[in-house]
Length: 87
Image 1: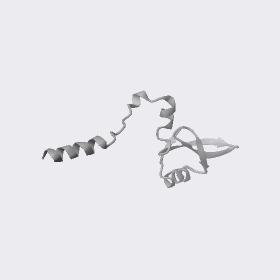
Image 2 (image 1 turned 60 degrees about the vertical axis):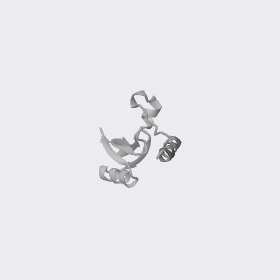
Image 3 (image 1 turned 90 degrees about the vertical axis):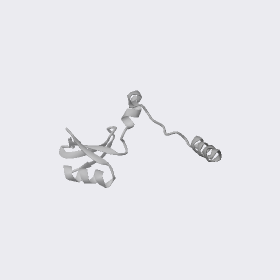
Image 4 (image 1 turned 120 degrees about the vertical axis):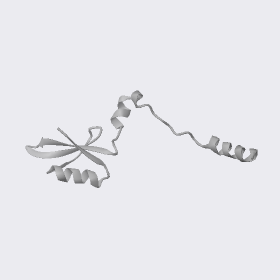
């Protein structure tokens, strides 16, 4: 029995502990990067005199424009991201 416990402890000791981050201690750049690959927002804007829907990454980086809100949301979903509308 002692031998079994010794082997289990060796297996456990060899594994790397999961890393946890306290979100209260994120830097500005870490906060800006949070959700960049999962979230996108859509904003109604005027571009060259035309009304369009701009698609931005979570950190504000412009990604694309669409003629209507439904097309913008569909494009975001097609890229396996979650869309949100901002005013």
